[in-house]
Length: 232
Image (cartoon, rainbow, N blue to C red):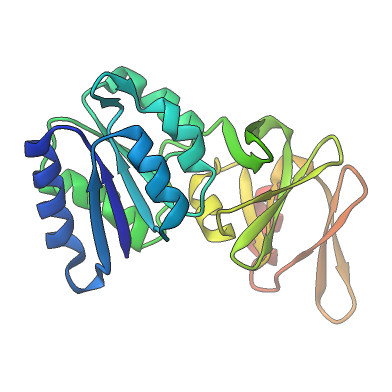
């Protein structure tokens, strides 16, 4: 695991660092700590990361200024902040967890378990997906998303307007973040179930999800029964 801590209070940063080392132990490859947004942005550009632990108030700077950039990347973001009133907004952006200050080892471990065990965030109220575009970040409403296709370590987002956008997160990471209205119907597809118009069974035990826009997506054999029950 490659982890970055973005926290300006030295005492708290050291505590997070100690707890992180205790939890990940031999699974920890690198752990770095920065206290400024500009330094954090530069680090994110240059270094591979699995998790970013972000405070929302850094020497008076707003952590949300880096959040849209962070959630567009391949890694997961966990907020550690005393500003509990901003938790809903953070989840809407697509963070994996929000750990309120003051916190203990058990609460931080809970967030880390979501990372290690690929646990789905229980809040499920993500409203936006941030994707990289030339010159900046574009925020896409979850309402516009029809389905997601795995493309190696990346994913392809298929939208209502017929456009396709590339996201740096893997299908597994997006599955953790997306609301329960999306189902993994195949090893390569996540679909909003309200977009499925029909489920087709073809010879040779081939199962197809027919979408309202006319597209046909495969359903995995092992997933057919549960998907059909949820669709009905």
